[in-house]
Length: 231
Image 1 (spheres, rainbow, N blue to C red):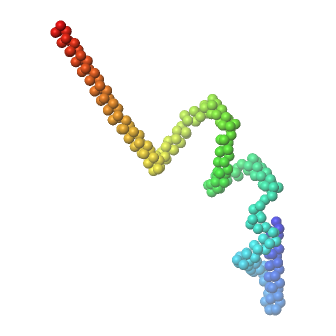
Image 2 (image 1 turned 90 degrees about the vertical axis):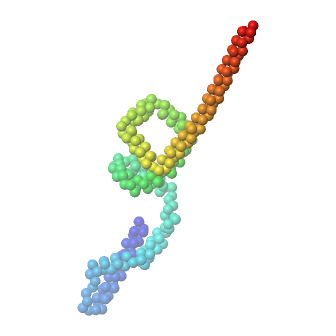
Image 3 (image 1 turned 120 degrees about the vertical axis):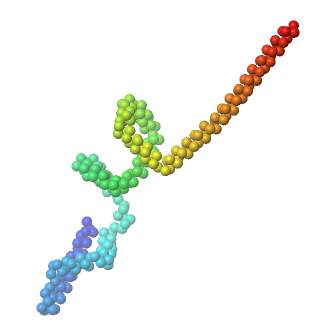
């Protein structure tokens, strides 16, 4: 407020100086008339647009108000409480519901807002996950029959399936995801091919053992038959 008053006073002093100069010039010339309001206004605007005038005003405002960039960023406890209550009233008031919705539909505002609260929400979730009571509450919530019914209803819905198919298509169109999938398939095929030769070698060994056992049993039968004939 003080800064605004100081700017107004500076403008008033400038206008008075210009008026006095114009009147003095008009009196000395005799026939020349004084400056009109339009000319005076244009001159004041031109002066204020110059870099020197803007720097002078900024230095004067900072000196008169006693604020610097560091001190202006510092808020006392009372100011913080007032800001907190004001934000709370705005967020909870039905009158500002439409305004907030329109703001959140703005991509630029939504992006900046999400960046600002993302880190805070992340820290809150990390702390909640470590809380035993919060963990028990999550377990009870997921074990609830009502919640399971809602989840099943959502999964069986056509909208969910469309979103899931769209997500899968986007993932398959991603080159990194495709490369990872091909790598997993290659490893799975290599492991399957490595298992089959072992099974075949194990099967051939069993067949050889079985054939050797059969040959031994046949030899024993033939030898026993010959011994019976000789007797």
